[in-house]
Image (cartoon, rainbow, N blue to C red; front, side, top):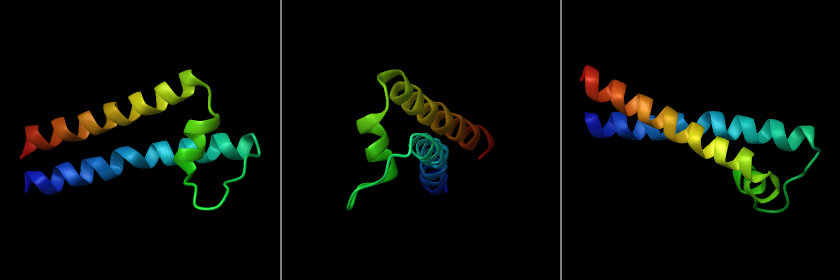
Length: 73
C-alpha cells in the first residue's frame, strides 16, 4: 500500500512543474521542436533561478505527499 502511495506522490509532484513550464514557454512564445518535452525545453531556455525553483517545488510537493502518506497509513 505504501508503495502505491509513493508512486502516486511521484506522479502528483510532477504535475505543477509541467504546468509552470508550459506557461513559461507560452509567454515567451517558445515552440517545442520534434520529440522535445515541455520540461526538457524549459530546462534548456529558462534562467538558472527558475530551474532551481522548479526542482525545489518538485521536492517539496513530493516530500509533503510522502510525509502525509507515512503519517496516515
